[in-house]
Amino acid sequence: MTTAVSVFLQKKALFRPVQLAADYPFQFDVPFTEHYFATPDGERLNALLFPADMPARKGVVLYFHGNRDNLQRWGAMHRDFTVRGYDFFAPDYRGYGKSTGEPDEKHYFEDALLVYRWLCKRYAPEEMVLYGRSLGTGMATYLAAHVPARMLILETPFDNISGLLASHLGNTEPPFKPVFHFPNDKFLRKTNLPVLIFHGTRDRIVPHASAARLKGCLKPGDEFVTIEGGSHHNLPTYEKYRERLNAWLVRRQ
Image (cartoon, rainbow, N blue to C red; front, side):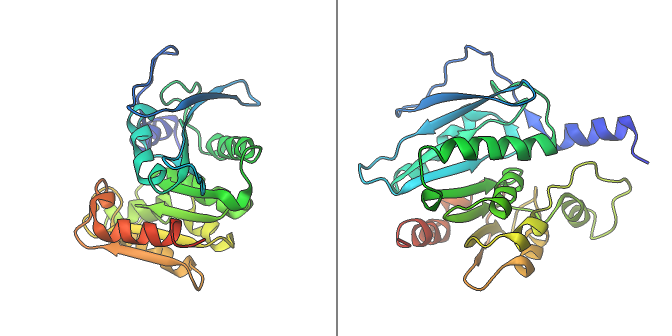
């Protein structure tokens, strides 16, 4: 039986938003535009779009960020993609930054589909790269299982919330029933998109064992990149990450 206290504690552990005032001015040293989306149930989502650094745009990266902070932090992630010729579009989840509402798995999936459909009015599906980091891998894999896109890239993913907890607890069953699921393994088995996964061996937030279970969900041609010594926060600093990202984003035309 799941109690209200258990739900509250699990939500607090999984979602770590930092809210921003509605008139907060984002500060970045490159051009960007700010966008808002009205959800069917009356919430308002905030998102940022950074244009590619080069005129010959290759497409757009739809970026789903991790479980902490807001777009003032995550907008800076555009650098890995705009320099490679991709526009960078990142939404803030409900309850994060300027987005209204409360964290909720079902609504997060619905909101991901909402912003995807908005992007489809501006980019062809074959121009869209779905990118998820940590918690954001849940939304990215959900879309990959349900809509067309060019590819799916996951950074520091987990197999599902139960598997993540089991990896932290020594592969034993958690002493409570998880309220949230984010079944990346289930969604990966359903997608036909090419899949690239990055994970580090010293990740203390999402143990490598949790991500490694996703290998059984991959198809021929997909790639699981293990970065020796990589942690949860520093994979883009490794040459192996940059080389494989180039191979998939720049050389795969």
